[in-house]
Amino acid sequence: MEKRAYVHGYSEREAERLGDQARTLTELLHHDTRYPAGSRVLEAGCGTGAQTVILARNSPDATITSLDISPDSIRRAEERVRAEGIANVTFRTGDLFSLPFAPGSFDHVFVCFVLEHLADPKGALAALRPFIKPGGTITVIEGDHGSAYFHPESAAADAAIRCLVDLQREAGGNALIGRELYPLLASAGYTGVNVSPRMVYVDASRPDLVEGFTKQTFTAMVEGVRDTVLARAMMDVKDWERGIADLYQTCGPDGVFCYTFFKATGKVPE
Amino acid sequence: MEKRAYVHGYSEREAERLGDQARTLTELLHHDTRYPAGSRVLEAGCGTGAQTVILARNSPDATITSLDISPDSIRRAEERVRAEGIANVTFRTGDLFSLPFAPGSFDHVFVCFVLEHLADPKGALAALRPFIKPGGTITVIEGDHGSAYFHPESAAADAAIRCLVDLQREAGGNALIGRELYPLLASAGYTGVNVSPRMVYVDASRPDLVEGFTKQTFTAMVEGVRDTVLARAMMDVKDWERGIADLYQTCGPDGVFCYTFFKATGKVPE
Image (cartoon, rainbow over all chains, first blue to last red; front, side, top):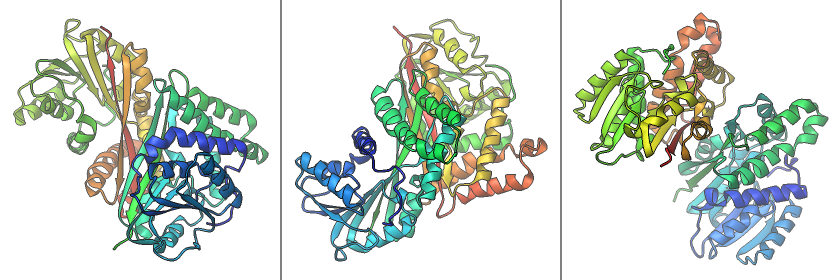
């Protein structure tokens, strides 16, 4: 994993946001990832452990190794996992482009919300492959900010979201990577690649998602780049505030918000 | 239904396109619409009968009345239904804003790819309501062209799609109506409104959808407005052709295409 600025920053609010996001989306994204007893699983890019907790709970008899390039994130992930009383996870600091393991060390690899931050996502997938034993699998989950659309429509909200996409691109990442998972995995040498889109559809009849996804996950993430956007005059303050207000408008009784995550699996040939 | 120019036109190719679309999408959109024996169902806005055939087959013991404002469409729908040997459908020419039936004549109403063409979709839904008996249901299916995104990205393809959206808007319709079904049905007086998005995800591992959806349904629909777009200089011919070529590019081995239909149901209070 290259060392670049993490577009969302490392603040307390960001840790909270990741926690909220994980809880709201757990069922949608993770319900069908269960690893058998005794299997060795690498979580590549665990961050502060938001997904680690879910992964470990869904596969209590698998042995999970969670790796991240940031020692600070690893420390927080360890604290979170210990606080939850989870015992089947080991943590390692390391770079996923030069893993500190022997080839074929794992039965399965799990990569969630990581490729979006990398300049060479195909290279990352190819770098992970030798560490999966033949017949093993990789599972990748990513969002795609270009899949966000809503009612009422708003050019200002579209522009605010575009700022996030542009900042992530400048930092070397790609906030539109979800749609690319099939060609990325196929070209990195995985077989039997299957992509399953997971759409989050939110209207006023689903108040938990209005709060947990539209407000606390997506809109909070956009609001998180406010200072950078304004300091760099990517939008003027009036348009920015209009865009954010319009995102909150999609949380009203007539509002609708749509976003799609992509979950892909692939195999390493026997 | 107001008498306005139907944005897709009434050519043979359009009839074929609607036929292809219906076959490819049948399972995704219609598998969960089955009406009980003896129930009276109104299909409001049947067009040339592409959905009528599916509706009648899925509910062979229901009595279906299919209505459209265009006598020519009704004639073609009748031919299609007769050719399929279907006997539980009766056709009527008429306007859904002033239905030629007694109030409470139907147990269920079905409206598919119709609201997108109307200047007053909420008014249409409200106009249908008195004809559904208390406790009956309405089912509405619409697309949303703003839900189309793809890999590789292309500004020219986005512009070509935007032409279709603009033309439909000028004709009094709304090609982005799918996302609005919840507030439309709720504000038209239906209760228990439930919206179920049906995403079409297409990559190279799904050749039937590449052919049947990305090429023959979506791209063919965009290509259908070529003459109007060029005659009115909404795009220049080079950009247009680039946009269409880029849509075909999403059908290649590295291409991905995404589109979402929305299916909504609501009830008339007892």
